[in-house]
Length: 345
Ligand code: ADE
Ligand code: ZN
Image 1 (cartoon, protein in one colour):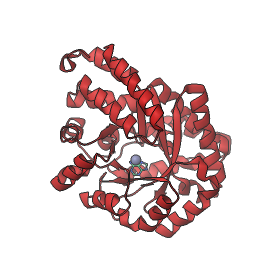
Image 2 (cartoon, rainbow, N blue to C red):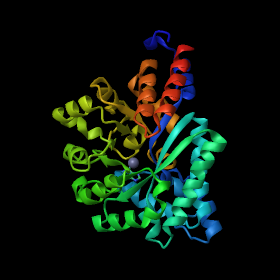
Image 3 (cartoon, rainbow, N blue to C red):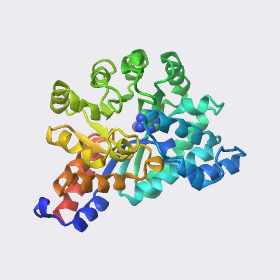
């Protein structure tokens, strides 16, 4: 690699474009672009409280997580049939391929759909078929992670896990998302224990808006393998030390944090501090249709705002690959491709 700190902006942008990378924090319902929302609404005879795409897009001005979630759940109401779930995920995979994503682990929220009468199998089979096509047609390795909505009860999460078990081979893990504050990880201790006993991977959103205590309990009670977001860890030195020592990965989503006002400006984001402190940080898009950018947009904006260099790019891509739940042979192959990409720079 050439002297990383001196790499030109163009070279850095090209490296970000071409380096193989994994996306580990993408809510597939958050990839529904307004155009697709309107197309699916028309296809399914669903009426929307917005006149057109422009009117919907102009409503994307969020003040916090809840103000976004209200719109996000409304947008998902157009998803009814297996083809809808397939089309949504396929749209994401085409964009991911353009960003040279080699591995994608997709969150999905079954309760958002089953509550509207959509059968679990319709959701999972549509998404699974898109994952299969991502591998065969685009060369993207993809898997699904089933998320529980934390504003609902643990009993409902347990029922959801049970309802999904006929498709146990169609998802690799469980996660925890939706409104964080007031819904600490320990509320879901039993359902996560059940998921672990089933051999599922476990992750959870913690420390997006919620306090460091939620990150501690995600680690110690839920025994998660990755923390989604985790940016509030910065306020707790002992937690920072724990995360640095354990190298439990954080799936950080800079443009999401900006749009949901977790940080006032991208220049104020703490991603570089966390990297400097030795944490295993990754960059992700969260809900790209709502937050103004897919994965490489997140890299590019963050690199510009925080003045990051080629060495950071390589570290972040390597972290994403190592933190993924892909098999070791695939990880080694992508890491070799990453080395080659930087050797040629
Ligand atoms: N669901 C979709 N996006 C989310 C986020 N950023 N935080 C919590 N739940 C979500
Ligand atoms: Zn998220």
